[in-house]
Length: 196
Image 1 (tube, rainbow, N blue to C red):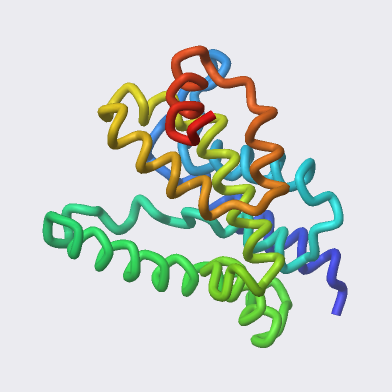
Image 2 (cartoon, rainbow, N blue to C red):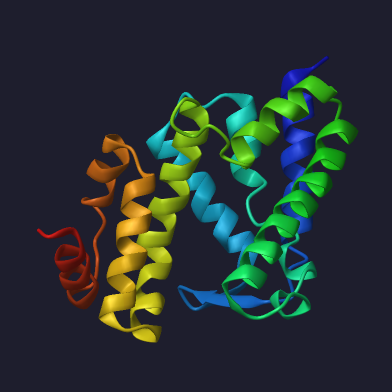
């Protein structure tokens, strides 16, 4: 099997899928499909955070939020239980889509299963690649999406969100997070939440 060719084909098909997101986000005066822009940010962060990333990890990173827009949150009950039902269903749905792309690009079932363990972040504290992906996801959230969350929620709620995010990350992730150029408002909330 030509791994590089299979990797290129997989990433191309994942990119095509992400570009179908009907939701739009503006960045640097350009409008992009929101999930495609998200994956660009994930990919760039992974390159800098873990330049030696395996083929499985690279693909797993590009599987994040795959076809997320196809399963509306409103199709599940309101409240915490409904939210987790939606998240669990979405996780399985997304990876089934990813698996079809991975197998179609020439990788085998065992390879797809290894990607799945990273995507689902199972055994995160004993699976270094799952932890790396979690760090990357958290860093992208903090760098690009935290400002909007802070504007939408109370500081008390944001402190909980920040602490939960922080506790998912490794020490290396913490070090990278503190290099992010937060806005003054966000930096203040982050420092208060972390007791800095």
